[in-house]
Length: 600
Ligand SMILES: [Ca+2]
Ligand SMILES: [Ca+2]
Ligand SMILES: [Ca+2]
Ligand SMILES: [Ca+2]
Image (tube, rainbow, N blue to C red; front, top):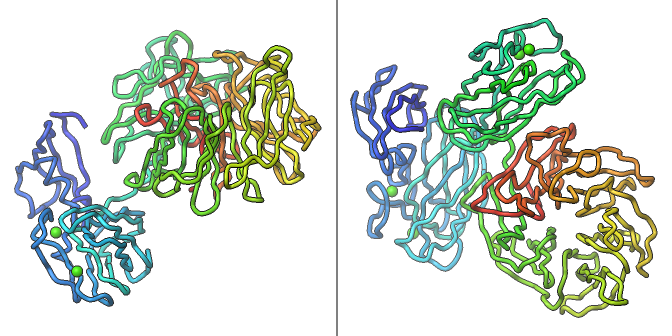
């Protein structure tokens, strides 16, 4: 939102029973209420709210105002909001029950403000409308009874009254100050181009296959535009998919602006093969809360025909781990509950990660590998006695496979070494493969062989190699000109391998950003990504990838090194039809992501 502009805000956010629209003027610190479209007795016609306090407490439900059974109201510890907090007395059956009214049935984030001055967790049973949401909702120690923290959970709420209850189940509970609820609204929609504001461009319907009542047809090569108004409930990153047809033989780029600012000066709309052949041009943009003007303008070429704009945010919220070899850190990104995000520093040269036993993740470092706790990021087991390591894999026998490489020196050829180390860090087996360079990751297969990526003595013919226990190459396949990163063998015998451009600039036909799925004879069965398929996705250098549990989408790290820092998303997700459906970009949090692991 911007100061001194009119905005409409849904009042259901502020605990009313129906959708009311009210108008505000927003200044840097103050919200001035101008009026509302129905009687609203709680607020005078003109009231001032401080944005920092009043607004944020309007969807807050104090525990001391809730129904309390056994639990008592107390105020002898400082730092509470409202008139006190709720203090559990008995270790069982005591409960707090809030009644929360909503007008939208969706998933909500429930945020409990609490203090636990004890030294152990004080879990409570969380129920919503009589159904158990969490048998043990954690309330971990906060460090003192006057130190307040937030415990959160997600639950579906229905329209109308919802009963949210926290019950003691065997141990004394924490002190509970209040509950905040926030809707986890997936913001998504499709807006027809023919219904948008058309300047120069005209509505047409003389080609088949459009949605709505037609499409927008540009007339002039410069200055014609289509402008949509996209309403965002909350600010954030959105995926845009423009459905278009380009029956010509060349790209027909347009300028994309959001709220007057240029997002892409040359958004590509490549030929679709016919005027009745519709395709998607996807890009990610940042929208403000409220109305956003999204405009596509011709810039010297006749434009494509535009059918519609699909926008989405929050439809995919992931939990994922990311290895950043630029900032040398490991990140946990919890898009469902960002309060659980963490970042820990790791050694340089980190490229590999995977889930291992005991709630740990294993990460390769230039000097070896280490385990990190999935929940806290705390470092555990490690080995750091190697150099040139680029991969680590936990083997079925509990040992760890480290892959490292050495450049050629004198008469000694370049080599890749696969070292198997035990829990004490002692090397118990070793495979050496000579003459392999540009080595990245290794994956030991169930047949005892290992898949590695690299080229031969720097010849830039990048391949995936299968090597046996003596280091002999028993299978190899050219990666169609792209530099390989990681290869995995599927149960059906196919091999998946990521590849990225060899030089800093992509050369059409020579290399690409793709995850290839290759048959045993090297045929491309399918692929995800691709510079031609996704000209606006700002793909730079694909590195590690991860399969999204549940839908089998492919989430790929888009490494932004070699001068590409800050120029694209860190990770991109493609569905089975190779549509770009999600991306993540935060250049403060991360610099160059070498690998991703999506767990939800
Ligand atoms: Ca108590
Ligand atoms: Ca309170
Ligand atoms: Ca036209
Ligand atoms: Ca349409």
